Length: 75
Image (cartoon, rainbow, N blue to C red; front, side):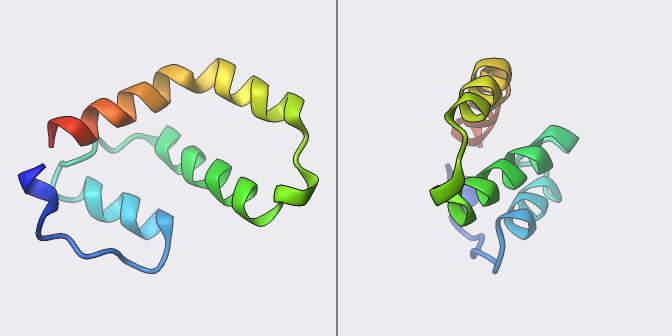
């Protein structure tokens, strides 16, 4: 976690993701941009979320979330 100690948060999740990819803390994966979009969708449309869509995304993309967590932990 030492790599993350000197990184200050930016204004948006997308900017933060890119900032973590620049020094190689996170790999540059297009799927990570989709994760940011998913997060924004949940945060900004929480009153209209279709639980079947959420379930499908989590079911089909869970390995990506696990990979993301592993990359952060190993930084």
